[in-house]
Length: 129
Image (tube, rainbow, N blue to C red; front, side, top):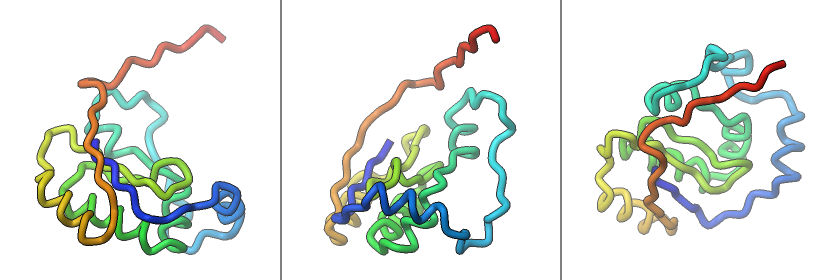
């Protein structure tokens, strides 16, 4: 997992307020996921979504740039973390060139943090209803 920290603060209160406004993007009616548990990182990458992402990226060019850096680097999924402005990219196959991504982040005044997650997606245990 690659974490990119742009030099921007995004107010959580502002972000929630912005969600109440009509969407400004084409994927207004987009639905995600099948409702089933994503049991592989590839499936997580395919189904992951953050409702704040379009709104925050539109208002903060630094966030949009961070997401674009992760996409160009080849991450399987790139998302805003929470309400922003940190962004992350999933790289389950280890394909991202860390040196190139670090240099691209440095040129744009962003911090790059490489981290790891579990090797597999944890099983979801559902209680009885």
